[in-house]
Image 1 (spheres, rainbow over the protein chains, first blue to last red):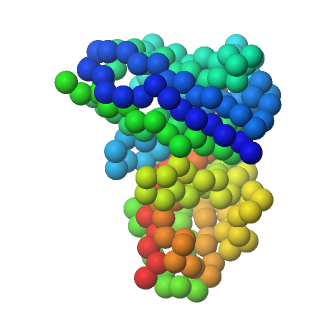
Image 2 (tube, rainbow over the protein chains, first blue to last red):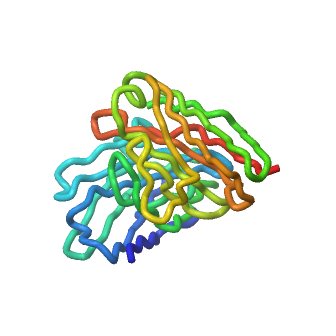
Length: 116
Length: 110
């Protein structure tokens, strides 16, 4: 069974940093593109970033470029999202997801709240 | 990277059909056959219902079907059931390894 479990969320002040982690199991992690998707409270889904199987290609939505960094550690079946210079508008549930053009599996999501 | 356009709401009585549209551009929906549809219940993670325009993952009822014409994709739910009441989002590959989601549609079963 495919499982994706996010951790590392919480409350942070504007301008602060947070690192999200995603532990993957039930599939060959190193064989898949991985993606982060977020959903602001009461709003729709927004693609944030994705990363190729070997970690050498990374892509971001314009609003997080230069502030967020996606990475992965295949030996530990783990995906990460380093979030710096956080803004109030980054407040959202962040989902770890498997896939690139199609998201086949989703984690349960982790809440990140940016507020003073 | 503009969101795809969906109607905010759609509704139907049990047993009826409801169709949700998802309008993009030639750079996303119209340019690739990588349109997906997701079902999301309040407080829960999305679930893949349709991928590559009209393919259903294992376990998804055949009441759910997808199609595409030019820059607009559609999801049809036939034989509506109470459990189909949820939010539905489309997504499309948008080139350059980017993905774009729709604005979301709340489906109500009357």
